[in-house]
Image (cartoon, rainbow, N blue to C red; front, side, top):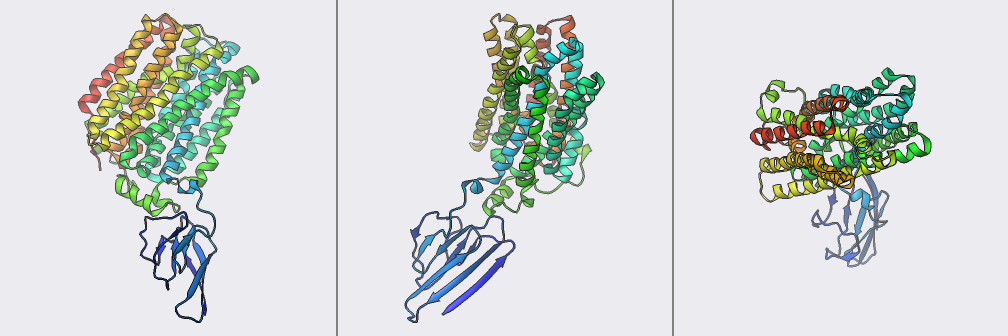
Amino acid sequence: MNARALLYSPNLHPLYTSNRPPETSPRNRRTLKPDPKSLRVWIHQRNRSSVFRVLVRSSDKRESSNSYAETIKEGREIVNGNGVVSDSLSSVPWWEEFPKRWVIVLLCFSAFLLCNMDRVNMSIAILPMSAEYGWNPATVGLIQSSFFWGYLLTQIAGGIWADTVGGKMVLGFGVIWWSIATILTPIAAKLGLPFLLVVRAFMGVGEGVAMPAMNNILSKWVPVQERSRSLALVYSGMYLGSVTGLAFSPFLIHQFGWPSVFYSFGSLGTVWLTLWLTKAESSPIEDLTLLPEERKLIADNCASKEPVKSIPWRLILSKPPVWALIGCHFCHNWGTFILLTWMPTYYHQVLKFNLMESGLLSVFPWLTMAISANAGGWIADTLVSRGFSVTNVRKIMQTIGFLGPAFFLTQLKHIDSPAMAVLCMACSQGTDAFSQSGLYSNHQDIAPRYSGVLLGLSNTAGVLAGVLGTAATGHILQHGSWDDVFTISVGLYLVGTVVWNLFSTGEKIID
């Protein structure tokens, strides 16, 4: 007897014609004990419609039968009448088994790596550029701060856009926009200072929407118990971007001239965009490749589910923890952005390193941040999983993120050794990175559905600190010293510590 069946399902979940539990997925041949007269087929289908043909042949003897299944699409395992399970073709590749939420996290990580590569290259290139064009420190400060003009304008708008239309489109737009602006930077510099200021501001527009978009995406993809480590990994992409930019920029400038830094770094954005458009979705609901087990895990442990149609501004702005978040973001970013933009100049002017040494030694604080941010993320998630309240964990981590940098910056005025100064900078930035498990994780804690908007609000204050701090540093250095620059940063770190511990919370306050 011959029997052929052609089956098609456009949206197929794992199908079982036996009593085998769904969670078992044998990869190697093994013997089961099914009914010897039954045919059992298990289908492991990830995203594609499944078309297969089952051919059953039996002899004239009722007690003896053989059956086999010929599959046409991939992702299948077959159990024949003798109870032997095997793959008809090769097993599913490991990269298709990798959790999709962590694919999203890694893509966000790489986007932020490019983000800071394109941002810090100016802090190295500004040295030969200022020599070529005759810029004084005040002009250098103006150029460095012009990036933040556009960055400031798009924080809230990027958050609203991401929360309403989805983070995939917004982050993709941001990366390609700032990549084009990076490539245009040498051309603008040759045309004149006003053109350079406009292009740097345009670059800030692209990078300004990236952080709210990322926060929106992760609030939908990452379960609560993985929040700190996923955010720490993404933000460590920024630190490693600084490492990469500071490490390669001096070499490229030395070999090919300062314009090469902007052309080479900017072109990488197109490679990233290709991967992003093919691999990412704004939420698990939109991703047809997501396995049912992972979809259920995310749905059960992720607070942000429903799309946002309107923003409850009055409710958001009436909450003290929101204002604590905004104020502390300002205090944190003042010191962080000063070090981001002025550290190579500090090494060059104060520690007397040359261009190559300034770039390479600037790597160590950012490398320290990348390591300590991920360590802090694992510590925070471990504490939460062991029963510590989210509020206490956020307060502990952010207190380290404030008091650590404050302590090490105060030691710089007492240090004469360049090596010790670099070590002090590295320790300052390393403890600063614990903020990724403190205030940077707090947006999703207190308002998961509006995390993009909330990050846009707080990061607007943070960017304002970058604009004021970066420009003010140039003026301070014309009339004062680096000790004055660090004293202001330390004072703001201490204010942030008090405000954070008095008013912050890790509980959801906006539904």
